[in-house]
Length: 366
Image (cartoon, rainbow, N blue to C red; front, side, top):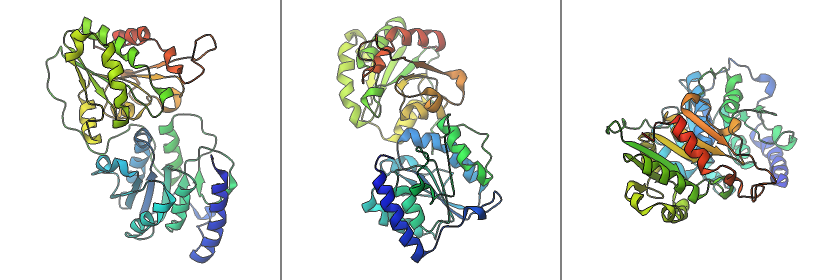
């Protein structure tokens, strides 16, 4: 809870609001067999967060097949969320209090929700809006424990969970009577079939960017991998992917690549929509990436990945399904490695380690 004063202010507001508009249902009235006809599910943060929420969203849909389910998502994912089979509509919200009224009006167009499930959101406005929507039961995945100003407004919440985020979300919805055995992530829209290419052709994706600089492996290290790979396999090519904000990583990478190989590198950084990115990743033979959204898209599509972790924990946000096709390198920061204790921690993973892992576990060098 970065700004507890906001939650305290929201608590005071909700005490007054619910006196006029009606109280939440008591936790004692909840039971696993309870049926819900109108459900709202919040996933308003990053792409990777949403992907790890998809098993829980599917489990809710399967438990309540006749319910009308509204997904609340960030507006930057508008074209990506369309046509998802596990919800009936999407309401877009930027997590800001000044746009909350408009979002609530859209929620109420289909009637008052019975149940709100907050898988990923920004407190305190996520549960504030859930209460104001009229939902009588609110489930929320909390990342900070023991905060009564927030918790008194929640029917169910996670507490002290140590494990993978996919499992964490599934455990949150298990008391609804959901089957939580399926941990596989899914994209909202099934991509087209993979493009047919010669058996010996290999397309390797490089995702160089991430949500923060400390999660980014150096561009020159990616270039070392590209130089070795393209020198040893004349049928290999590299595709760079990433969002518009990662365009600045392209030139430092290209400058370090042998000019003889540059015609076998294609950059799609900042050039594709999210649906197009899904199609691109689906045709990779492997993806080399840090801990970021495209990693989880590739995992959902069953595309082999090599993911690099240093500042984040792979047991929490690394591959959780199909572990036989996914490899993780976990760098260890220590005092004797210059810069590793600061935002240069990703340098603890060497290009030699990555090349060896690709060579031993992925069929991209031949």
